[in-house]
Image (cartoon, rainbow, N blue to C red; front, side, top):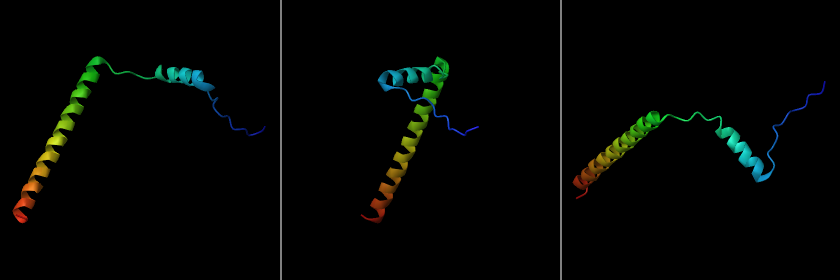
Length: 70
């Protein structure tokens, strides 16, 4: 028995790439509309909270440096 490595078949050209891509997309578990909406809201809220926190810290350090270096 010979020990040969079995390599996956490489798609030939653009047509092979497209068919391979479509095959992979069929395996994707797409989220429901409700799940997509709720997760999008969560992301928007977290980004907004992070931006507000960074802005507050920036304003504090700006104020503090103006007190130290008038």
